[in-house]
Length: 214
Image (cartoon, rainbow, N blue to C red):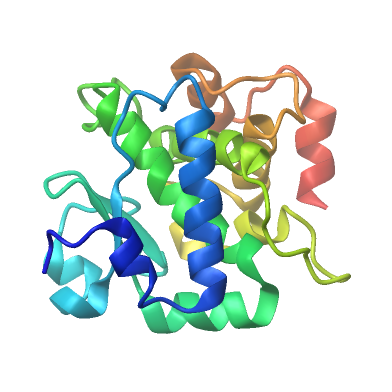
């Protein structure tokens, strides 16, 4: 079953998730950073029990994550029921956010930063860098469903995790800043030093970070 193509897997997924997957795959192939890399297979974790059971080391490790990159299997495992509910409520952008975050970890793994120690980055900095990479993909993703009037592009990173995970995933403001950086909306970048500084609360445009705290 694991040798099915992405198109075959996507055909089994709800429309909102299919739309997000297709848009991100096109963005992946168009981005110079990832165009030479294979697009990870995106599969429902229901095929292998749960993401944590299928791949204990998958990133992000927080139990609230709806999509995780399993570096050992080079695929993304999704929590289909929860991701389907998010796509139905908020549209394909929110589904794409979770998929793009997992793809951000795939980019880190492919660039030799699969281990926080190897990459000399803290867990929070590594997760913020993955979010920044996610922003670059989302910025190039075409055809995603328009967001509801009461929801912005930063709503997903801001509300992604409960406060108990801030020490690992970054604060809502830091997560939003990281995604916004990938989208080209800050004076920072997705480099290791920049994301390590963001994890420490140091950015080149502090007023932008403060504004995201409100």
